[in-house]
Image (cartoon, rainbow, N blue to C red; front, side, top):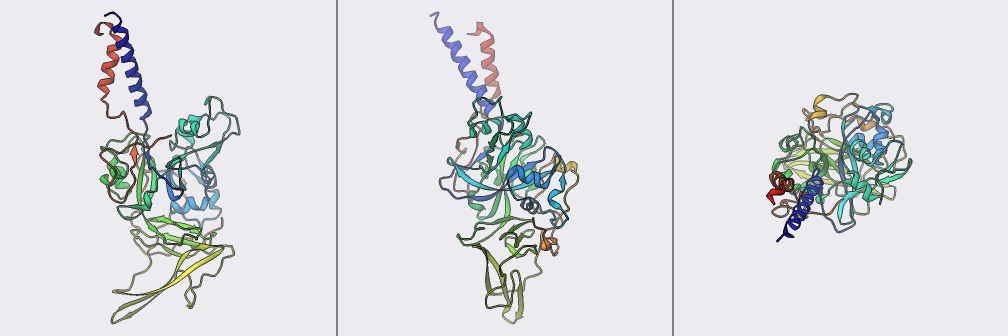
Length: 420
């Protein structure tokens, strides 16, 4: 049967091609969250600067407010001209973005990049956006036929990874950080750095094991304080990670999430802007004010809280409650000065956890004087993650389970005609 040998040879060639192609495709993996509605959520990107950049330049890369970049990283924004502060190359920062539902999966498509001389899709993806997107994803998002030809000044959509998972993790408020795995990272190290567990990371990312590869993009849940603003409020769904701030209501209100807290605390942000009244109705209390009165039955607590921003109006609500004991001083996140250099730890280890060491002292935040300013869903191994996650996420890893020995064996078959 002399015609069988060419058939077997063709079969082996085809099989090896498929295997090697799959192996190349899964060199980097990203967690994907399927979705079916048009809602959106707040999310974070873990971004490593490819060169020295001003705060405003980093914000411009992602089309976000420079102040939001600073507050997301608990950087003191009371410094003069802080938006023009130069951040050092290789600094890791968290970038707040809006995560939408596009083509059935969660991602952010609000970022655009204007090409410059010498740009390639690979340099844009790997260097400028630090591996948060691939060259192929940019090519597909912009329907580029020939990736070797880019016009200077061409406006490219940069699709970026993000997840929502209903803003919870195991039933508690959380915001999700898209984290690009570094060569020295381990799953245990990432979990410890972000005050979570290996099991939680595996469940969120639908991982079958603890192995991770440089370039993988993991969804990391960060403990957060969630708002309960009405849907008609422009800042509905506001969620702030532990140890950071957010500025809202047209720069009139500052909301913080203290270390280890689950309660969002909002107060006026003393800006050089015109703000609507922040006084609670039928009360002398202003936004953020809390009064306590000890009694034999417990502690009477009255507070004036922030309830959202709608049609140019700051919504406040007055509440009173009897608590077993009076609350202590409000805990605020510890602020850091605008970074001027990068330590070895910040380059070669996972980014700092949202709660910094020793941040448990009650302090008045300096920001009270704030200056103005592709992909198809896969299937998780063994079923969907448990806990608060109702939708299956996946690390796209269709061929990673195939032993490398099998590939080598088949290649050897091709090289040795006698074996056929």
